[in-house]
Length: 113
Length: 117
Image (cartoon, rainbow over all chains, first blue to last red; front, side, top):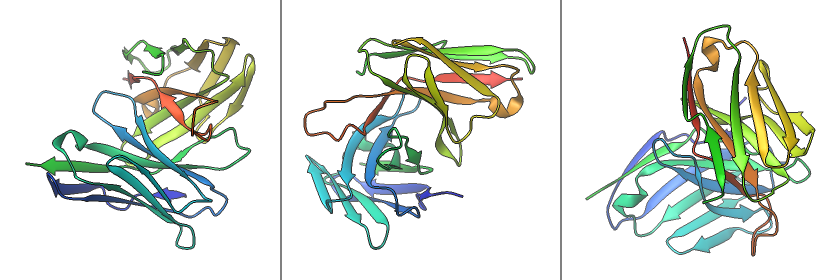
């Protein structure tokens, strides 16, 4: 049972445009959400996170939006750059569980020139 | 750089042999985790540790054991490797006291690619 879902395996965006990566979750107990970026042959790199008490968090070109009623979060990258080409994973955790993360299956983003 | 190293980085072994993967951290964090990454599954938690000699199971713990005899090292052992354990294994630590952070963020090592023939 996949509790965190990323339904788009891949996404292609032109340089300078907005990239929107989506993530859905089914477990209403999740209260903290994270995005990781992963390049080939490297470990995932933490990108940005959001607590369930917020609906938006921004860090430079990256913004995460959380819609609790829809159990949906999205990562916006503006403007997209070629170096953003990577696999993006969303992850979720809940308080009192030693911060164990449940990951989605990932979306491969390709930013084209 | 989260001060995490994993060894070996690559390993090929045969079915039925024992394998131990090592995760080493330099920052003295209490929580450490082992994940595996497989196509179509993302990353899945195998085991985690919340202190020396304190460990617990994750989502896919069958066939794996762990040990943590000192803060800086977290070992993952496959007692008798099977082909289904061919995967990329990542170790992670959880940093606490991050400015502006929630203490839920985990930081990952570079991974170990394991092939079981």
